[in-house]
Length: 277
Image (cartoon, rainbow, N blue to C red):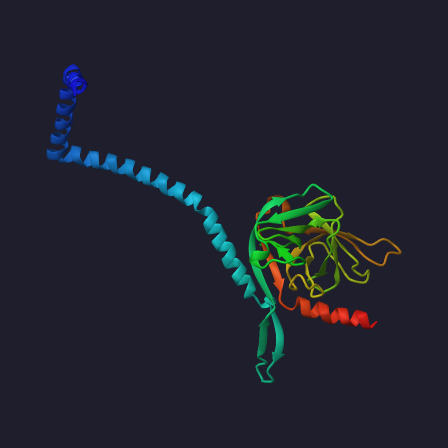
């Protein structure tokens, strides 16, 4: 208490000046419209800037949740696209109505690890067995094909990238359905090769390459890339086709894992046929 009294005694002049100054400002802005308006405009501008900064900061830290929500919504929409359905029958009417059954569903995921500079590149995502992901599922991005799931843990999964010498994806030329195998030669991560396209098939630059219906991993028609260059040497039976990939693997952040509901049924049937031979 003594120290407090000593403090007021020592600085009473300054304290008195401060309160008189404060009182004079209150009187000035209370009874003068111009000064009052100027003060309100000034404080309003400061408040607006302050709240804008807070709002921008809050929105920034909320982007992850917004992004996850959009990915989940995109996965749902992809599951409703026509190439995610299997045509199970047609009604014999003049308008030829078609009955469809769901064949593909999609699971959104974020990339947590990725490589593009190795001969055999892999990708790790933040979804695993508890989210319904299994080995040998196809993976795509919003732009095109990404790869194939190889290993799965409870919370994570690894993907054998399309930039991997062991990855082979059944694809075709969109304009004529001529099929081949997409295989990376280990060179430029922006390009891959479409192999085993018959020499009699006409090919031009910028022809679009998409997934074929010969794959149990991908729906038909998923974008892959465009023909960048092609050649056919004398005596060869197949074109040499260089494909400019749509997916930019160096900036890959989000992917969709594809579940083919009929895959096991098809593989069991085909396995029985092979066993019979």
